[in-house]
Amino acid sequence: MTESVVAITGASSGIGKALALQYAKPGAVLALVARNTAKLETIAEACRKKGATVETVAVDVRDYGAVEQWLRAVNDRTPLDIVFANAGVTNGVAEGEATEKIEDIQTLLDINLTGAIHTVSAASDIFRKNGGGRIAVISSLASYVGFKGSPAYCASKAGLRIYCQSMQRALRPFGIDLTIVYPGYVKTPMSDRIVTAKPFTKTAEQAAALIVRAVEQRRTQIGFPWLLWTGVRILAMLPLWGQNIFVPAFDYQVAEDADKNAATPLPD
Image 1 (cartoon, rainbow, N blue to C red):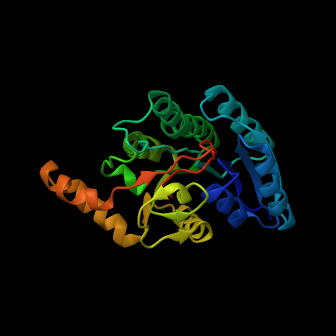
Image 2 (tube, rainbow, N blue to C red; image 1 turned 180 degrees about the horizontal axis):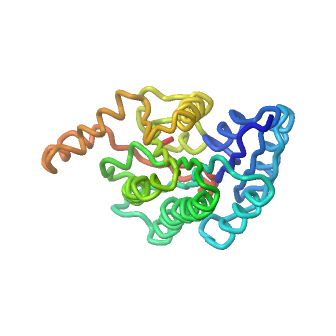
């Protein structure tokens, strides 16, 4: 019996890695992509040891043609069941500065927003022809309010949230379920760069288990931890003056790191 055929972007670390390992079992077919092929192959081998069939390839989600070609090739071999748009990066305002570097902003938006849209769009076309399928997109609790420590990151995840809410309505008539995921803090190499208190931090494995359950249940959205998800949604409903009072208590800084292109979004 064949298990799910699952494609995951940004599978070399963090939540993407944990998702791959969560789905890895005898009969499962995993298509994993990232830009760091050395890390990716290490994850792939761990999944193969659990009995899964795994294929890997380096794909930059900013290149729609490459994303489309990858997903079509996977689907031609074995029809896809689930596609995860997980790849992402983060940056923040450097200490002593008021704004982010424009080149960092452009890269972040190209990967977090445009890259995720590329993945959703390509998967949608395939699933429409297949007669249905499931898509999961990793947004963030930071999509609900703007934090001064990382404006571009918040903007990218807010844009992704609205795009996916629109796409849910568009895809439902075709039997395509889209789950939007709003993680809080998850213990990943990227989240280690965030300088702030991190209440209710989950491991990547805990986060992946919650996400997989939500996708299997075909839920429209999931946020965790529940208290923080509730809190940011309440903050988002406040007038701007109210947000200006309370949001600074939750603000954070993103420390400089050599590995800015790691494929895991923050705060995860």
